[in-house]
View 1 (cartoon, rainbow, N blue to C red):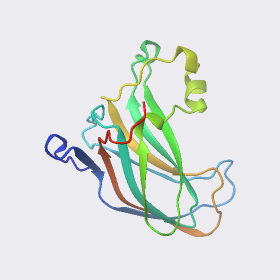
View 2 (cartoon, rainbow, N blue to C red):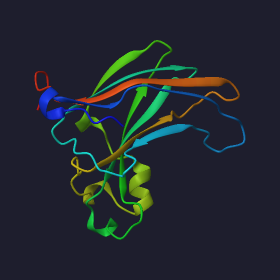
View 3 (tube, helix red, strand yellow):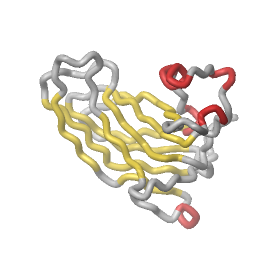
View 4 (cartoon, helix red, strand yellow):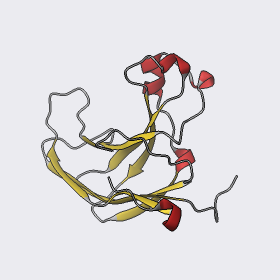
Length: 168
């Protein structure tokens, strides 16, 4: 992870460049491959000052990705849980050509599987701790290709604030 100077630049570069080659094989119920980024000292990141995330990504043989922001959760019933990491997801379609996606951070949503795992419901959900981001994870989408070499190239991930076109 790269710590930029968000106070001086108004943006924070989280990842510079990563390439991952893989072959998914038959025999798994839900075959997928993923990659995660965390701080080697398990430091949490405060992204509460940012309202957007920009990801420049491409993929050979990969059509869609699940992009997760992973946050330490504040729900009191989870305090004793060894894994109180909340996953917030957005799905993106990718292509072989590098493309930059601008994502609103508020559009990341907690997936149903997370609520089911902890026996929670969205109605009883607490507030999201944007000041306690633990990491970012990307995983291949719902219908991956099998038995063929594929690759994902992450050119950059940047958090930034832009209020010009945010509708309330």
